[in-house]
Length: 499
Image (cartoon, rainbow, N blue to C red; front, side):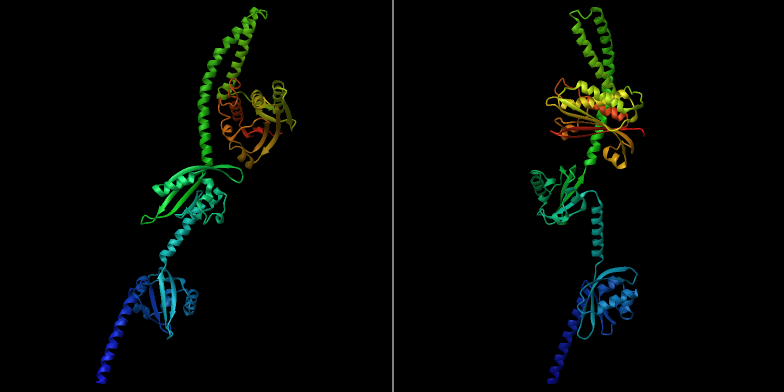
């Protein structure tokens, strides 16, 4: 009886062991990681289906070959792998193994040592992870190289990522932004703009676009286009917000320049047509008035009336000249002249015409300054600049500084002043006043025809447009700087001749 019971027990135990073995083999074959069993001598005893599928070697092949040598053909790399396999508690290590087909499999391995000295290698395919990491690095590199500023926020509006461009636009460093609430970028969302943006994005889930203006540390004001969009996962859940910021200052400046050119062309054509008609109308009035005044003599009661008509006609003719200069209908001949003498004549005229409450300071730093120019136009230009400066000081008086010097401009200088200039010798004429100055909005319009800050009947708004036309005709450039309450300085650069 004891023998029979023992036999039954052994059979039952054997059956249980067989079932456990089958269960273990089933688990080994169906687990989604690679398993390789090495005995204490280093020979392969078993590989699972995941290993066969990913490497291409069957268990039979693996058991009858030098598997480690096949997977790691480079001797130095193979030695590194063996050292890793022999270390207890070595953790995970990323390895590049060669498959049966010769392709490279990106994998990560860990080792489990058993009590009998055998070893189980556990490996996972990390090809997708490596590829995603490469794509992430490539994307991050592309973002960093782009001109657009990028910031990523979590659903709580905390900043998780910023690129270099956004740091430059915001004037803040990465360490000052990461982990902070988006309101740290308050310059981008002035007033209640952020609150409105937040409500629009969270309630409607739609993209928000806008524009802001901020002043950089250098003092330069920049225009920035902004766009904030929600980001959802595959289940439609909000996971992030992304901000794109782009400096459009140069684009806006070019657009304004183009509009200004088109406006000037249109007004120039109109002004030219008006000037020709006015010229035809003023000529007989001038001739007839002068004849009548000669006939009746100064004692006639009508003489003062005719004299007033004559002076008004002269003013009209002067206006026609300015209109023709502005419209470029009458391009004047140019010759080699000394601008110092022309400059002095113009300043002398200003000294005689401006009120005594305005002190004129003349500063000529050279004896001669030769250029190819039209003397009457240059004189007109200086008088217009001085008259404008004098007008800004007519009520309280002040100081008008008029200066002339020679200067050689290099590439960096001309790039800063105007893209129309070429490096070389220039004559710089500056007219500076201590008047009321102008704000940024006014500065944007001072060269527009018929724009004036003077009161009615005090100005026609052609002084500075004519200056600009003369400067452009002489292939020069004009620069203006002004501060409200402090005054204005207008500098003209005209191409000069080598002295």
